[in-house]
Length: 568
Picture (cartoon, rainbow, N blue to C red):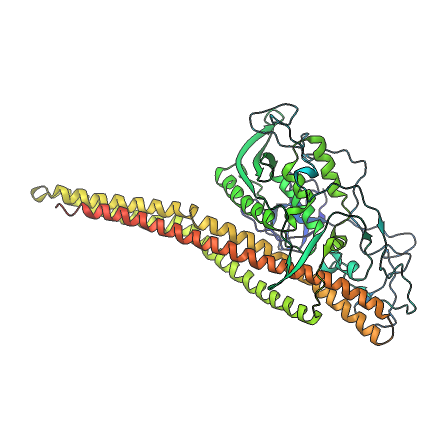
């Protein structure tokens, strides 16, 4: 079969010999478009061949030219206000809009588990029946979480749009030439230019408040936590298909639900599609082989717990209707309805900005831009330092299991050799001394084993937190680019107004929308700082506590061995 061209949407680091590394925006070749358990086989730009996650890449389909146009579906023409070299593009009224809502099949009747299963809710281990493995069926709707309401598809109207509000001055700010930039793909450009429909009578709102530290997300009115326990291997189709299910128990319902990793993956994709200026935590990476090994299952469980902790602590993500549905629904029918409701949600991407309510306080756009630049510098430096600590901790884990363990074993063997040599001197045999030296050798061999096991108590947990923050930090360049693009459009509009080519009313509208983006971004930055302080304090305390206990155990064993020589 001929290879298919694809583009990497995210970077992926291989952890197994069968996998290959791919970098964001890298051009790839896919050998077979049909994925196997969520993995594709292909080749990266460096010639490496192997597996990589299907959800991390986009298949590039060859486009068919429209009969009316030769090379594209839109028409370029120059702006009267633009100068040579100005990378702006305008669309003719007959061309499709640059931002289009993702389409979903209205009559798609596939199940939630349409990848490979027929059940939409994971079975509880050891229980079967019409309740999908649960002895008591509890189907939650808005009453289970008062701030979330299931609403009908809202009607939309155009408001404050340059496409519907004709001005006495016809010039408008040009669209970016690069239609694949994060500013365009996120819908930020469409929102700033006033091309986003305004949805009325929606109960979905996320408030930004002013605090002494600046804009912050309003706290969730119904805070909760969620535990993840009991990863259990289950099978379907008479053992042909195996998977791991996790027991999730939200504190606000206290009723467990059972989810597979691909269910988390679905939710994660919905969150990315929904929110443009929120750093959605990354899920633990996929693995093509060894998925049922105990070490991998335990590692994934630890990292899912951290992921869930960040989700439930985020004032916006925790209130998202799709997330609540994920945590509470146990009925197949209700699940599919909620799944489709989430996938047909119109308040995504650019439209999601309409759900954000900002305070009345004035903020100078130049001051906001400076704060964003400072955060950009900080986040880049933090990203580098997190990567550095990750590399050091990973290398230390290998030394604990390999080098340190072997060195202590060598020392223990050397002491045992001394003891055995002394036993050959029968005329001057000192049995207590020989036993003490032999026990000393065994003590150091045991210390070697302690070193090999210690990373499970401290370094693994440190690496879990660092991995989470690598994902969070990797989101910010695109998020910050949305704000930078918004600033640029506002500056362009003010320049055109000064030249008499745009109404000041239009400029003021763009400034208002830029304030929404700015307040939301600053609220997300402040939330990141608060969580960073909590998480790194906990990480360092845990690491030092475990290190103290580790060396105390070593000290106790050495003291016991030392006492053997006191009676000689």
